[in-house]
Image: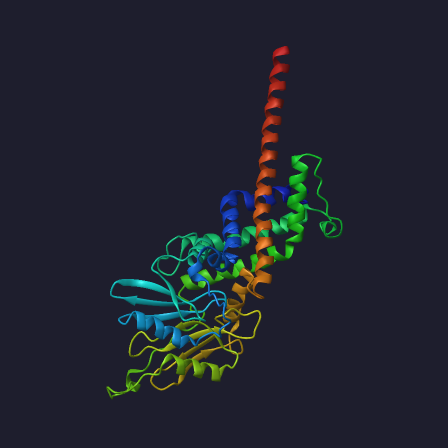
Length: 383
């Protein structure tokens, strides 16, 4: 078997990145921005800020929902979304003149600060990064496949890069940036140094990206990772027209009793007579996302029809609820988000410096080839 040379690995390293360089760079950049999408929303949209100058306690979520219902009496409220403490709660509803609207409610004052009927910055950035705004058809998106396939590119570039860069660990103890030895040398040092210090980040992004690719395949094949929300059995519906349905406050109390550390983040209200309360939230588990707990509660009986928690998840569900915090750096709030943002910028910069190095070598090879051709023609004419 022929020995694989360093030149082979170097060329393979380039081919793992260059054919899709622009897409890879764009995915890295949009992902970096998406890490701080909530904070950028707070910065750019005053109506999204949960200002609390009087240090008031947070009001109960059912009270905020009631405020929206009071202001829009004919509205059909479907969803409540809870974000960071410095952002408003979002209550989604439809009305006769609003096909879909989001009410931004201050959780401390109870004031409805804005009604948004368009795209949000958070949703736009996640869609742009996640599937490049490609449409979803029959359970899959070409863009989602394209973005998640970048994990293979990233992992391949990492492996081949470490093979090419001998003794790479020296960059941990003796990092060097040679500023005065030309552009090529500086770009090479920047590319190598960023790559070595980002090994852990590249591995993490590759692993979570491969999971997203697997998830896309499962969705496309109609394989459910989590079961669908059950509906109330028609046989168990109350016969009396005076029967009262459980309100949201009671449903949240049931969830809190079942899981004392339950922190609501995404609440779905019943859409019809047989609909359930679907309450999702996080807990005291640092590595799980804010949807790790899910309860389906019968609004007529208060019975928990189905539940999911870190304690009873299967393997696929566990990976699914670990992936997002590891991919977006939401493990410990702003501290880990900042770290992920910095290394996201490094990864974006690496794709740019890698392209510049390849471009420089390509131009040099073209000039050298032309020079050799010119010399050959001169020798021929002289003879």
